Each structure stands twice: as structure tokens, then as C-alpha cells.
Length: 380
Image (cartoon, rainbow, N blue to C red; front, side, top):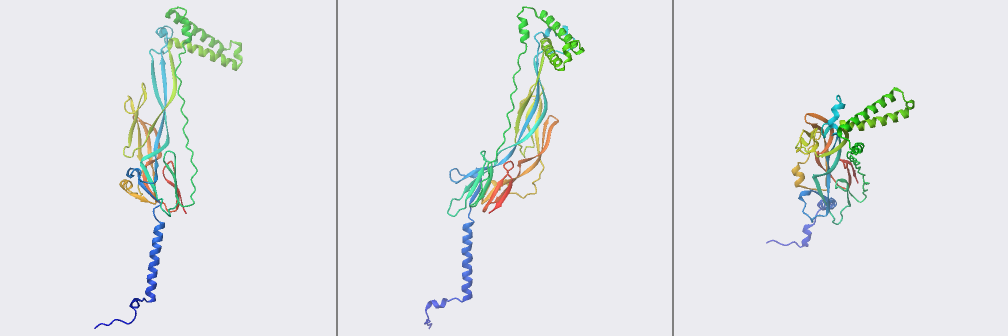
């Protein structure tokens, strides 16, 4: 028959000093782990914008920049204006070319490219902030267009000074061509026929040319003064042009700048952006006539060695205490008009690059607002 011990029951559970030390050590480790877990709680969570449920998060959106090509086409426009007395031009100017009808011709002289950036809709994210007890201070700085500039987690974060964005000066509009036939209109009031007026104009031109010859040959005393000679010759030359235009017509030439914007697409290497013809000039899109103007952007795969998250992973997952940045890609850009190359240069194309994630734990991260690359990272 079993007998109960006469000692108190709890005495049978007394632990040896070594066993007690092991239990205390394990308890301390558990408490330490719990403490560290509370400190490493998510201060922010980054999610692809399309996966955000409206109105249920505390945070803001930010975007990485995409590259946009600004192409300025330098075009020379020549307007041919028929002279009021052109029917009689061949009677007096057999060897000189004259304008037979109104027309306009265009010549593509050059193209200049510059880089601008816009928010990338395929790199738009939402950062939700943890406002729970014990959360660290989070500061996020974005440009007015939503492109991120800096982010910091900690209690002593400096906000980046705003960067000034330069805006290109507007290209002055070309003034419309003016009718300089005021002298002829005055002549018409005399009631003379066009044949009589043409003879009168031809005689006047011959007279002006004779005066220019006398001026050049030195038969005029005032020609000894260089400034006077220059002024007199210029006045005679302008008079000759005005009278000649009544018979031969006018050729008014001016230069203009037409600007087109292109956003490179890695999936579409060649983009047709306009048409150019000598009779219509530059027509945006593909509906005009003439030679096609295309932009070719070929990635040089400078970031291909990076083992980056897939696009599906970027769009489907949420990332705690992490921010997306971009490693831009170098590409070769070529602007063609038909089979002729107008421009070729290597530039950084942001959207051709790789999206990456960087950890954010009591640190400060500064972005390049032109590329989306991280330019500095400071741990607190």
C-alpha cells in the first residue's frame, strides 16, 4: 500500500540551481525577443497603387520618374507670294525666276533633343503609415507632381530643401506675313492699266539699278563716307526689292520650332511620331503625308545582371519598412526621317531600368528626382 510523504507537497518540485539558471536565461531571451519585436514593428508599408482599397489606409502616394523625350524640330518655311504684275514679268525679266502661283515649301533643318521627367504610372506606390503607440517618426517628401524626393524614419530627420524645377522659356510665335504692296496699291489709284504699270515698274527698277552702279563706281561724292555709302546702298537695295516683287513676286522665309514629346516604351522599340513633307511640313501622328519620323530606343541592358523582383511580385505584394527605388537603364536613342538619321545619342531611360526595394529602419533615404535612383542613405 502506497504511503504519502510527510513533507509538504511543493517540496517535490524544488529545482536545482543549474536548472533554475537555465529557465531564467530562456525567460530573459523570450522577453528580449518580444521587446525587439515591438521595436521592429512596421513603421510603414509600401503597396502597388492598384492594390490599395480607397479610404482604408493612413498614408500617401508617391511615384518614381519616367523619362520623356522632348524633340524640337527646326523647320524652315518659305512662302512664295505671286506678284500683282506677274503676268508681265517675262516681258522684262527673261532670265530671272518669278513666282507663278502662291505656295509654301518646308525644309527640315535639324532636331534637338532634351530630357524631361513625368510621374511613371507603372511605378506608382502607396505608403501606409503605422500610427500605433511607440511608432517612430516618419517623414516623406515628394515634389508637387508626386515624384518622391526623400523619406526618413526616426526622431531626428531633416527634411530636404525643395529643389527648383527649371521650365523652358516659351518659343516666341512667328509673326504673320504682312502685305508690303502698299506702294503698288497707291499706284493702282492712278487708273493706269497693268501693262502701263508694269512698264513703269520696270523703268523704275532700271533707274534704281543705275543709281546703285553710280554709287559703287564712286561717282557720288557722299560715297566717300563709308557709313553714308552703306546707308544709301541699303535704301536703294530695299527699293529695288519692293519694285521687283511686284513683277517677280516674293519669297518670305522664316524659321520655326515644332515640339513633340515621346515616352520611350521598352516593348515598342520604334515609334512613329510624325510625318514630314516639303509641301505640308511637320504633321504630328501618322495621318499626314511624306516621310515618317520615328524614334528608336534600344536598351543597352546595363542593369541586366541585377536579380530584381519580377513585375508581378512588385504589383502583388506589400513590403514592410521598405521603399521602392529604380536603377535607370542606358539606351541608344535615334531619330529618323525616312531612311535618314537626324539625331543619335545615348541617354538614361528610367522606365527601361529595374525596380528595387531598399530597407527603411531608422534611416534617411534621398532619391534622385530625375531618375528615381537612391543617391544617399543614412542610418540613424
